[in-house]
Image 1 (cartoon, rainbow, N blue to C red):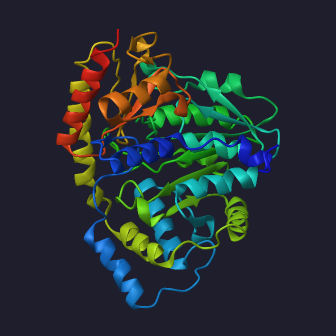
Image 2: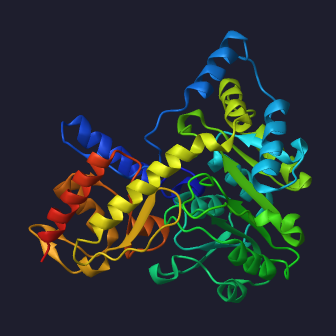
Image 3: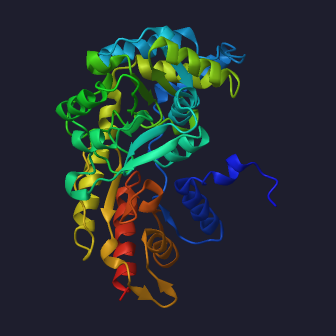
Length: 397
């Protein structure tokens, strides 16, 4: 009989982190693994941000921080929302956390009761479902297809809403698909949500600055849905600050207060040094993110061109983030030596062990027909990775 709690036994391990861990183990054994499993820019944090952190240490920003974050940082988040997104959130409506992952967990745990339903479009970021389960909520997933660019329709959403529905959680740009919702698409979804007074929406916008189609659009821009929208963002992806662990929300004050209360009992305020680094990032012009975004678009085009040369792979054109979520279902039922490919998990393990390339199987994101390929690494490595994938797949008969 397990001595662990039912809560932890029901919780799945993050498959993205599990694949990264497996890759590191193989690398430690001397194997030449190209790890494309983790969602992390390969760029270094800009020097001006690192300098701000060094100055913070010298100025003795080394004590406990307010649970919701330094006031200066919350004001900077407020100004960023107005400047970049035309959203009005006061500093009192902002809560800074140790990454957008904690921000999302705070909101879900603060709003969702046992038995309440949370709608999650497929493909979804791996932690959405597990956090809903932690809150004892019921995930209700909405399937999409590669042909629809992995986007839900307002009609789909309306059909999924029941008397138990409390929330919808989605990301734009999306991890893992790279899909970006337009202003018109967001408005159509918002017009469905507003019909249900007890329905809230978490808009995860952490990939805001990695957008290849123009201006980023926020759900909370629509006045009629503003009071029921929680906007999640952070500095991890756009400023190459994954290890600094800074995310934040803008939300109605009563929700921000609840998240502060939740966080106060779990982690309290996040790292003082990281907060001062984030302050420098958010006060800077968003143009500092443009070069990295351009590089990601160049890599996307490179990888798409190479993947489309492989028989049996189906791709769309992702408009943001740094992933390609491609369909590999034509390889199901094939085999090579002891490997029998029944699903995306089998195929990703085969590619790791036979091709020395670490990708993440689509079932981690709710779509077993696909695999996620992160192109957040150098062009040389990307070219080599696709070459290895092509050779490994050619052996399957």
